[in-house]
Image 1 (cartoon, rainbow, N blue to C red):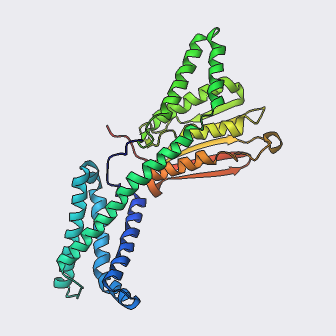
Image 2: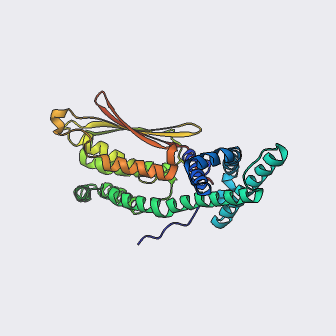
Image 3: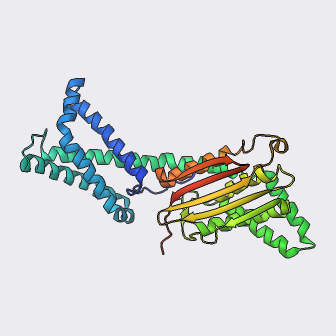
Length: 338
């Protein structure tokens, strides 16, 4: 059984994390209001009475977490949790005192009661993110990575080894290079899928895969590499490009006797990294099947891993136009430190 990763707080500068936290806080507010005043009329009145305090406290805590995100990321998990809970309690007590003493508003409960409720809500939100990190994310990543590993089909290995055997006598150096590429590819399959890797590592793996397929397909595989200005230290999920290139080869190049053009392009600005994988499609009467009708497992896997790493700030979009199939991966531009 795989060991679960250590606990850690989410990135409170991630839009998806903040939205998830705000929704959860509002749901907890509805529950607390019902517990304090059962019945629809009492429940609604309780929501109105607490609104002048609950909303400012929520927004203030979120802003503080956004500002403190770098420190929380460096702190130990227990210290970070204690800091977040204490912060929520202090902010709630401060707002309660300011609204009652400074502005003369009548609020239910005391400053200590408000601090206690805020601490409980903060603890519940952190418990949810910890549960998601420990129970949902690793299990999902492991299950999907197992499925993704199956994408390296058995006959791909056999074809690769046959290519090596064919080169051994006439081109031993080329056979050795091919074995190195094959070893790099399978080494990546065994790596931890939960950690991000530099883009240059993913590009090297993509080249290794293409080199292997190039030996088998020859001039039928026409690769256009538009990554000369790609940010080498940008952080991306591992095994991201190879499955996309494999789909392009399997559904674009292999069915067409004339081969296909496959393009890999990387574009980045200060905040966003865009990765494009395009391939020309064979004519329907040549393909003998609906183009790309079998690649959903790999694409769904990549979507889920993007969500696990970047939440709502990343996406995968597919399009088909003018005889070309395109996959666009969008994610935040996070550069490797050091």
